[in-house]
Amino acid sequence: MLTALALFLVATPILMFGYAYVGYPLLLKPLAALRRRGASAAAPRAAADGAAAEWPTITITLPVYNEERSIASAIDSLLAIDYPADRRQVLVISDCSSDRTDDIVRSYADRGVELVRLAKRGGKTAAENAAGPAARGEIIVNTDATTRIPKHALKELVRAFQDPTVGVASGRDVSAANASAAAGDGRGGEAGYVGYEMWVRSLETQVGSIVGASGCFYGIRRQIYDSTFPEALSRDFASALLAREAGYRAVSVDAAICIVPRTSSLQAEFRRKIRTMARGLETLWYKRHLMNPLTEGAFAFMLISHKLCRWLVYVTLPLAMLGLVILATQSWIGAALLGLTALGALVGWAGLRMSARKELPSLIALPSFVFAANLAGLLAWVKVFRGQHNPVWEPTRRPV
Image (tube, rainbow, N blue to C red; front, side, top):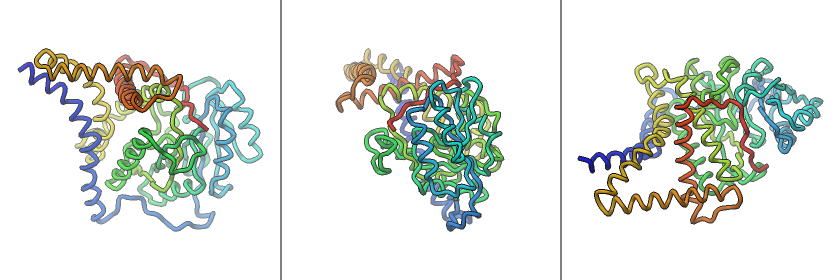
């Protein structure tokens, strides 16, 4: 009986991980095929590139905090995007920056760039809330200072809103070494994971709706942009939930590419994952009624599978370790598995500590990444259970 319990504890995170990352996409594929054969296609309906007068007015919002190193190139990149200038508003929201960020933004005033400065630091969501009253566009497009949007991508994103059922359109993230890298330059584990995530979103779009947008590049109809959204929560994740509540779909647009530089170190990615997952968990709880399959149908199934099941894996890890300890007292195989797990955790911990000072060798990089990801997920749950809210942000600094 004790051995059976131990095996169950060890198997639980493995099975949950397998469902969330393999089983769920495999279930989406036949659902997507059924929708394609149905009366109405789930993918956003594309339309021909019309004259400038036919493009909707848009507001591009850029929340920043102490981005003097990258803000000028970010604005230059936005101004170079192919979109009618008279139908585009560029709005930079400074979260009470203390460096030269605001002065640099003001130097672009003659080119139509507007600055909104918060009176005190409030965090990214507070900055986005402040953008709402100042936005004049029919579509609000959110991005950040260290990502780059190729010249053609904005029209691809906005074109999705020609489908009246679409309330949110999310771009396709492409991981790259830095902001100036080519769109096909993504390599390594982070690039592979980002590509996988974009594939899942594409399947969800074909089924009906994605359950979370990319914070690096997404658009939302102005009428569902909530300027009173709780500051401790994640607006990009919630945008798809807000669209659902308003009767719209959220879609992923494969042609709307956004270049996302990889984080500078494993430690930076570790801190980012704790912060984003904790905010995501709080956001999911805030909108938990959308996980009711009796009222939300397939959307609830996708929200539970894509978000909740992934995050529950981390909660079960301590129980899995307990299961390994029990197995170690029952057989030499259990003892060997426990020893290998402990060795992997030790190597991962050492690699995480080393990553702030130098690039990790390949032999250490993989266990370090796995250890950091799992520890970050567990710590995110701890923050949520303790009620630790951190709305004030320290943006992830990425290579420019």
